[in-house]
Amino acid sequence: MILIADDDIAVRTSLSLLLEDAGHRVLTADTAGDALEIVKQQVPRLILLDLNFSMDTSGEEGMRLLRDIRELSPSVPVILITGWASISLAVQGMKLGANDFINKPWTNEHLLQSVNTLLKLQDTKHDTGTRAELDSKYRFRQIITEDPAMLNILETIGRIAATDASVLILGESGTGKELIAEAIHENSHRAGRPFVKVNLGGVSSALFESEMFGHVRGAFTDARFDRPGRFEMAGKGTIFLDEIGELEPGSQVKLLRVLQDRTYEVLGSSKSRTIDVRVVCATNKNLFEMVGKGTFREDLLYRINLITIQLPPLRERKSDIPILVDFFVSNLREIYARPGLSVSSAAMKWLQQLELPGNIRQLKNLVERTVLLSSNNELIPDDFKVHLEIPASKKSSNQLPGVGSITLEEMEIGMVKQAMAYHNHKISKAAASLGITRNALYRRLEKYRIPFNDNEPE
Image (tube, rainbow, N blue to C red; front, side):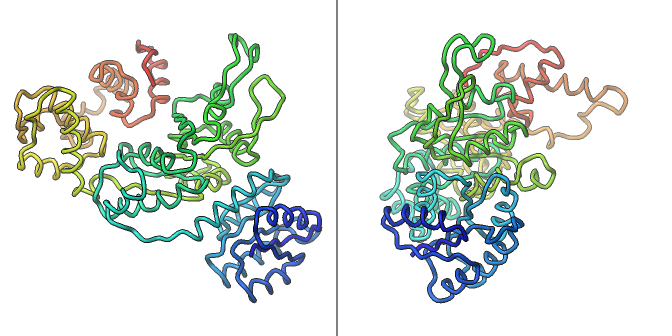
């Protein structure tokens, strides 16, 4: 049974007809007191809750009801119904335990999608199986792990993939956030549709609308052709918004409106288009700290993190290092036609002792570089030691120039030039080694007038 709590008879009637047509049993309440009595007598499977039950738009009555519902039934899914003018109320409601919020006027498809998603999440089991059991049910072929914490994450992925829940993937650089996003897509009902990746760290605010929503011919100077945006390209599939923590404030507002209204306008056109995509986001930043500092919108954060997945760094799953190394070496045997290639047990133990701040990406690069530059078929610790990049923070402090001998700007210029030269002017790799985004590196290259090739493939 789904409970609709709203003082507006038109809203109650409209929602009742919609949900009953979709096969759900519905009860309605026009006051907070009636809604609470229903919850006391029989716990609903889901509640649609308006925050305002009177002419007073403070939302206090709705908030009180939400608190009471959470005391009686902490796990029942609650969807708040609100308007753009009271989005801040919805955010307060999410803090009190609401699961989602729908904007008035809603689209029936979006509302049903949210209802069905929460019901599926409520009904699915949480039993974590072995890796073999998980592989028999899901497609996780590119995710190499036997770590118990990672198996829990894989079970979660398999369980939520069948829904349309928005997912936020958190974790340090190199932990495999993109692979997790792809696994969510591949195990969903959208698997036959596009999986579109967008690195938001490389999209400036000036190009955001054109990149994400597309443009029509003549929309701006040099717009000679119609160009589809990423949302259109992902139609009925999954859009993966990587590095969402790098999104500038103006672009955050535009993205929030699209995710909330499920509509957008192509740049240069006044015709609205609807979106039907699954949204998966990722970042290595702490978005909750950014919200506290005012650099990331709280309402956007609650819109994208119905499900949050926190990936552990490689140093917390060192038992996975041998199987990861074996996987990399197995691929390299075939690529470089070296069937006798192997890693000695001593080298494997040495690799397991490394901190590897760059996580799986750093381990993969180390193995590949060692295989390429070593003539030995059995790789020993010394083969790897030669090619290990030592983070600057681990180098002795006496390698730093003396105070007053160089300015901070001169040091930054030197580091940028050194990183670019070391990585053969590949922007992505140079930025990663400096611990900054591609966009941040571009700004420094332009600021210091350092020549670079802007034709690097994505």
